[in-house]
Image (tube, rainbow, N blue to C red; front, top):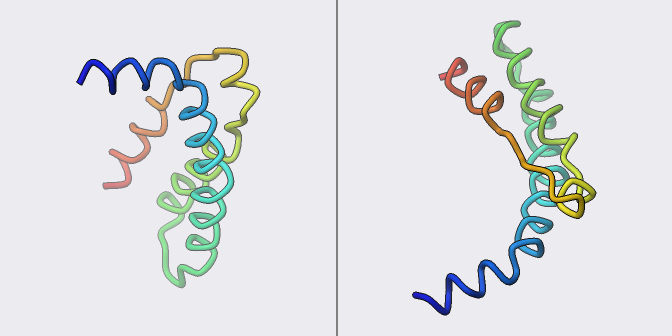
Amino acid sequence: MEELRRLLHKFKKVIQRYFVTYLAHFDAVLLNETIQNLSVCPEEESVIMSSFVNSLASLNIKQVENSETFDFQGLRLDWFRLQ
């Protein structure tokens, strides 16, 4: 367990870059396509889902390189409202 913890700490930035890239370039694109293909969606829900796309698409690797803290609280609150 300690070895795993040490490796995670050592490669933290690599892992963060991977997930930031995944969220911004795969999840955001797929979610946007899904929203576009919804035939019936209330406007309020559409606005919230578009906010998801914007939040995810705005993530970039420079934030990881600059050691910025990622705050997904707004995204979580929007998800809660959507449910």
